[in-house]
Length: 453
Image (cartoon, rainbow, N blue to C red; front, side, top):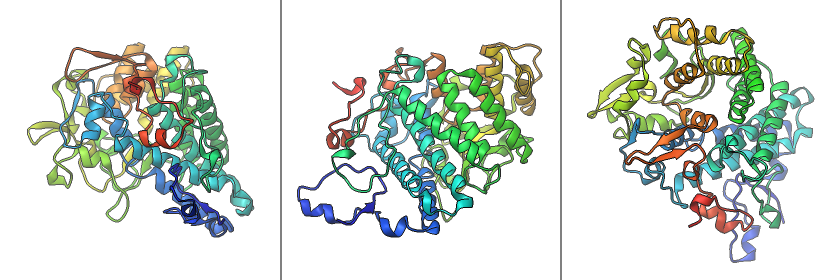
């Protein structure tokens, strides 16, 4: 039987055995795709294409976090039921958005695995870079999957709580080995760290729009922060700041100049490139308004959100009225980049980690916090607390998909949007179900407990 590279982990069998001889949709003949340096690099570009899809870093991962962590501060007003289920914490196991993100993440992982299995044909001077890029993609996808489909690291029992399946070799045909069980949360995080740490060492600081070492360091800072490993989170954030600053990254002079940009803004560490010919931005699609080319304003900002801002905070300038509701301008304009990680986040991570540890690696926590405040016309503080740092992080990164993950790692809670109920950080309704399609196809999978009734 001829083998093909399967661009996803599709575990559905036909009733007719002859169908197994057909090339899967979007498949590439293995002999063609993995036989030369140029072809392996083209396959690597395919992995980048997967992670920039709207179901992943093209906006949906940010949207999902905003809906799950709405906290009565934003409201879903759109007609699509899939985000409404997330907003209402009543997600169906056949939610097509959830299924799409799971499938696309594993497609990206599978493409990365094919690249990693074919490094011997890559030109020797490029092997480390190509390997580093593939590891960054794989590690990043496992990180996003474990954040949404598993209980948080802070929930304890990481050695027994179920994470997601670790698929580390190419899936080139479907057989019994394709029935992969879920690894533990601890095992998934260990693999993420292994992938990203090796990627950081092997990638350069200048690599066009592709993965760079300081991008990987920034991603590692997020991983370690979710784990509560503040020393490593601090050091990774400090590396991201130092290396990116040496390569021209700075905070924009005005806060809103970091958003609605055609290319990277000066403070973008990791963004998804969008233009009129290529790419999509689901945050724009759902957050903006028809007059800017979007839908009908599916997400509105509620009055309670504004209570978190100090008077005179220039970040308040992002809000405007449209279609009778308050909106954020962060995602207002069409064909603009999706911001995944900004330099400002690294300063806040370094400040928090240094404060928790009583250290001043890179800068004192107060200096980092005041750097963020100065940019938005707020007075410098003379002293700080953990609560002050977390409050600054909340408003700086608002509507960028980070608040939910911060609540989970700090042991907080989320308010229900229509009742007095609250959801603790480890509530099973704050994670997704394993898609029913995957459960039906793979008997080795176990469903999350909140979705077993």
